[in-house]
Amino acid sequence: MTDVPAIPDDIVAALDAQHDSVRPALVRLRGLIYDVVGTVPGAGDVTETLKWGQPSYTVSTGTPLRLGVTKAGVPALFVHCQTRVVSEARAHLAADLEFEGNRAILVPQDTAFPEAALRQVIHAALSYRLAR
Image 1 (cartoon, rainbow, N blue to C red):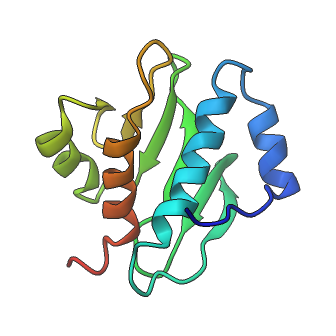
Image 2 (image 1 turned 135 degrees about the vertical axis):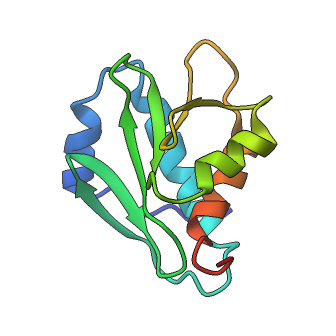
Image 3 (image 1 turned 30 degrees about the vertical axis):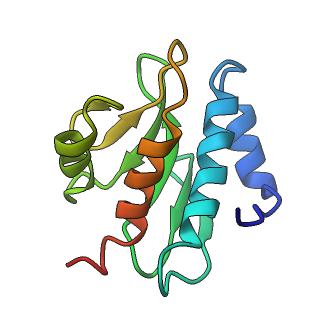
C-alpha cells in the first residue's frame, strides 16, 4: 500500500463541506487513488486540486478523477464523460458497481464498499492514456 499524503487544506475544506455520512467514503476513495497510482507504470505524482469545488486527481498517464456527491446525496467517483472508463466498467463490473450515466460510479452507503471493483475503475482511469 502506498503512503497517502496528508490532505491539503483546500481539499479538507471541500470534504468538510460534505455531509458527515458521505465524507468517509470520499476519503476512502482518495486513499484508493493514491494506492492504485503506484501500480500504473509511468504515472508519476498525483496532482490533487479542486475542480468545480470537488477534489480532483490527475496523472500524466490518465484521465482525471473527481470525488463528489450526486444530486441524490450519494458519494461518487466521477470520470470524464467522454472517456470509455464508465462504459467499460459497466460492461465488466455491473454486478459489483452502481452507475450514474456515463460519468459516475456510485458508492452507496447501504452496501459493502466495493473496493476491488473500484480499484479496477481507478486503474483504468489512471492508465487511460496508456491503453489508447
